[in-house]
Length: 138
Image (tube, one colour):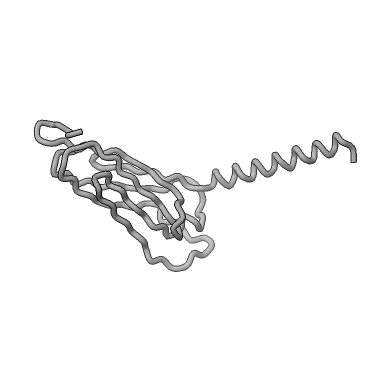
């Protein structure tokens, strides 16, 4: 085999492995987080919605554990009890949680999506809570 042919084969092999890795990465859903309302006055009750967007129905995103960090010292977690994954099973793509803030401030709420104690994705949203006279206290 000539040097030129061998070089071409190596380049094609590398290109194929890179594009396969790109395809695998592109298939994963993206985790987004939004807070409602994003601005409020104390006492503030906030609903946050985490949503998996795009991607394929990958088993690693099936029945995840969620850990919510409210950025006020509070954390909460949720782990569903799901039947075993089967090919063609649709992912749950929307998760919600509520939290009450009793002090003014700007809070960076974060949700961590886990599977078997392994992090899958994380997303954040900002919540601004005003006190008396509109002050945020931070």
